[in-house]
Length: 214
Ligand code: SF4
Image 1 (tube, rainbow, N blue to C red):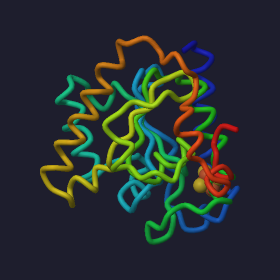
Image 2 (image 1 turned 90 degrees about the vertical axis):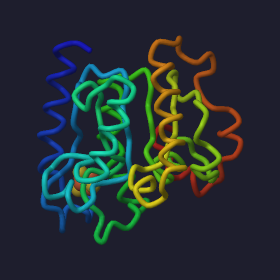
Image 3 (image 1 turned 60 degrees about the horizontal axis):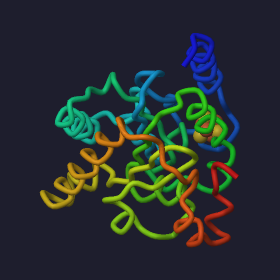
Image 4 (image 1 turned 90 degrees about the horizontal axis):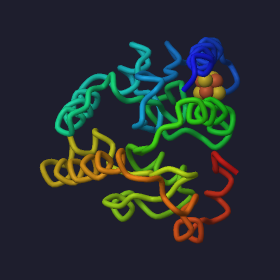
C-alpha cells in the first residue's frame, strides 16, 4: 500500500464518521469504520458493531474482541498486525441483522477498504458476513474449515467469537483450526481461480442482491 492509499483510507474514515446515508445513522453513538494496520495481509470482516463497539468506536472490543486477540496471539499475531472491519459501520438497533438497503448504502466503504488494504487473506467472522461475501445460502458450519477463492485472494470463514463464547470448547477448537489455516495461507500463493465457482453456483437471487462485488 502506498502512502497515498494510507491517506485515502484515513480520508474515507473521516467521511464515514459523518455519514447519514442510511437509517443506522439515527441511533449510533459512533461510526465504527475499522481498526488496525492499513498494510495488513490479514483482514477480518464481521457483521456490524455491537453495543461496546458503538460506544468505543472500535470493532470487536469486549469479550469477543478479547477472544479474537487470544486466537491471533496463538498464531503469532497481534491486533495491530491485522485489519478489522464490519459489513456495516453503524450499530443496528438491538443488534439485529443489517437490512439489504443498509448494506447497499454502506458497501462502498468496505469495498474501498479492501481495494486499499489489499489483504492476502480475508477471514469472515460469523454466518452473516460469510454468506454475504460468498453469495451463498450455505451456513457457516459447512463453509468453515476450508479456504474459498475470493476475488484473487483466500477467504477463510470462521465463527463469530461470540459463538465460541456461547458454544464452548468445540467451537473454539474449530476457530483455532480456521486461524491456523489462515496463517498458512498468508505465505501461500493466491488462489488460481479468482472466484469461488462452487459457491457461486449455490447463489440465489436473494443473496445475489446483497452482493458486495458485482
Ligand atoms: Fe453510513 Fe454505513 Fe453508517 Fe449507514 S451504516 S449511516 S451507510 S456509515
